[in-house]
Length: 154
Image 1 (cartoon, rainbow, N blue to C red):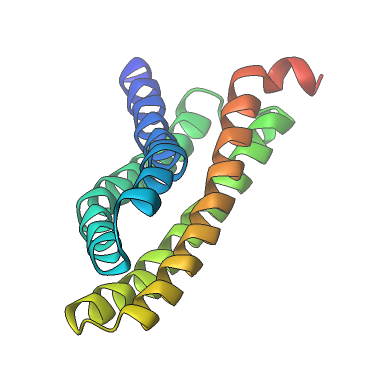
Image 2: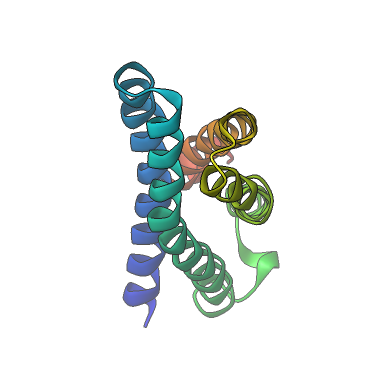
C-alpha cells in the first residue's frame, strides 16, 4: 500500500501544481493576447470548470495519502522530519486557498460570464489570478521541500 499511496500523492501534486504552472505561465499570457475580454473570460470560466474537479481529487488524495503515510510509514507526526511538517502545513494552506477560489470568485466569475457582465467577470478573474499565482509559488516551494527537505532541515 505504501508505494500506491506515494504514487497517488506525487501524481496528485503533479496534476495540481503542473496545471497551475501551465495555466498561469502558458495559457494566461496567450489568452490575454489573442482574445477580447468576452472570449477570454468565457475561456477561463470553462477552463476552471474542467480543471477544478481534478484539483478537488488531487486535494483529497494529497491530504488523505499524506496523513495515511505519516501514520503508516512513519508511525505518526512525532517521527517525521521538520520538512514533512512544513510540507503538510503549506499543503493545507494551499487547499484552503483553492477552496476559497472555488467557492467565491470562481462561482462569481461563472455567474458574471453567464450574465455577460464582463466588468464583474474581469474583477473576479483578477482575484483568481492573484490567488492561483500565490498557490503556484507555495506549490513550487512544497515540491522543493518535498524533494530536498530531508537534506535541508537536518
